[in-house]
Image (tube, rainbow, N blue to C red; front, top):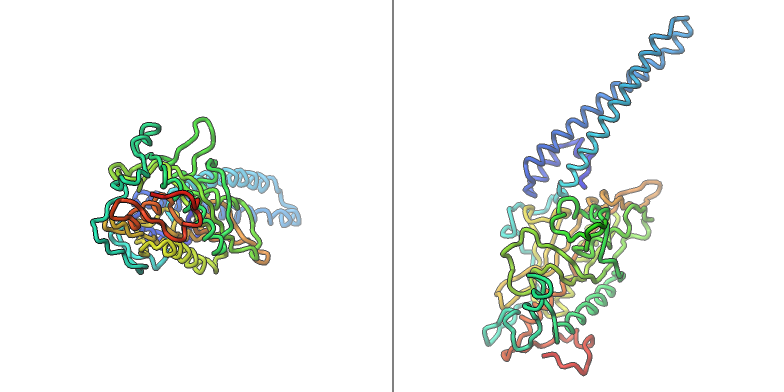
Length: 420
């Protein structure tokens, strides 16, 4: 959540920063209106409390001078009643401001580029050269020779945007998960196994609720939702906790299934398994001190990029512009993998620094001396398993329609199993 004290101190600074994220002007005006009322109410309360303190000091004076104190007592009682009434009014206004603020995105970092959408993102660098094929490369859903993905039966047993991996695809996906976890552990990230169902408080903490409720699968009659990403349970492991600073940074990784309704994505990526309601992902999450935040962000980007490089997958790093930046993110670098069948780069990982935005919502702090300080939380895909499988299928496809296997995955596959 944005810093409400900063909002109160300098609304114009906050508003100017949020314009980069293309915030709805109506929401901004509502925020300004209620924030202004909170300030006015606080000033009124301060005035009433100052008056109460001043009148209270008259008691010993009146008693010393032998004056009648009955009127003063009545005035103090009346003022006390008014203070209680105005305190309740302030609580109501602060609750209203909090409810609005929960729908306000994080402030972008100053170096986030201006822009409306993904067309204005800034390429930072490219890693590995795309392979030159001596035949026309196919898209992953056209590789019929290997029979790795069954789209029709996925729809039959569930609905659209569900699919079934089989044969070599299942084995390669399982190998990818194990390889990714081992790779991340070698880079200092500790492995976790997590629940796939979390409560509303956890989703509020990382920013999915209340704004993105329509994209979540809720369990009827329960305060439980299927996770959209392992970022949610990983980050909330330290919800409402104070961590000794010497334990930071906490660097965690986890494999999970992820579940998203993909609300608002009708017509996008309807073919293949780019955009599914259920997909596998290995996640990176870090909780850091504020001064370590940028260094850990760079480590996470490097870890995801090195993982793609180890798989021999050409990719590029892209800094997201303000208009394409996620709700909770202050800064994001996307890693986009080259898909020769599509002849373009597609997102496969997204690494974000949320600064203290999630920590303020989830009350994640660290102890420095006698002070409790809001931590910084960071998250990143490392990697989306289905999209990595697609990238392998398209980049390692052979002229006969079969798919070769990256060398680093071979030790993770049963040696007697032929993948074709």
